[in-house]
Image 1: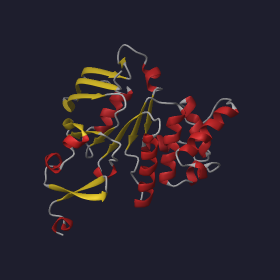
Image 2: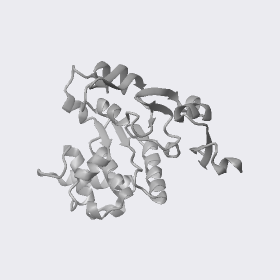
Image 3: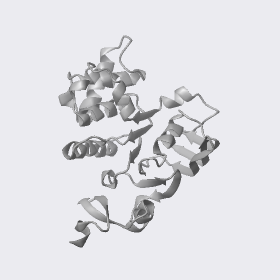
Length: 265
């Protein structure tokens, strides 16, 4: 079963083409990075995956289910989506482990009786993602990076088959970003759902993301295996200006303009 299969997706609103000729296939056991600048159409593409909006034309199949022939709420429960919008909805005084537990019920907050085994499972998941020190702490007292860790744990509580990480490092300082990326890398090496990591920073693309899609102005600029398309030539065309790679770590690369002083050293 393919995780995702989009065929000839077009999205037009008020005579404006927002997404065009989107053909995208994700096979099982593939982790993808979705790279695009602001306004490229990344959020619209994610909304199409989750079934929040409908395309003007084209076919969508997600987790073996064809939109228009399946229950959208049932399919949405099989997909996790970590976004800034979700974080804003979490009650400020909610304890971290209760936020994680709410993922079991796909709710914001807990409004029903729960069993201790479920709470213990939530605590175990939070610990497994590196958040043991967050147990008992109110959500609003956590740092931005810690909140993201709790939300990832919350998504895992529902045992999703597909997990979308929508620019999870936004607003993080250097050290918090590296800590979160390390946790994501560890999670992917365990039994994890298929991951889609959305960003506009190449240095965040971990080696676990073996496939990359570059989205530009609502169209796919390049898509495929990392080693085939993640190069200076493709990225220079993507950004519309000459760029070069700057090594962040042995397996992570930042992209900088060729006029940058680092390139002259």
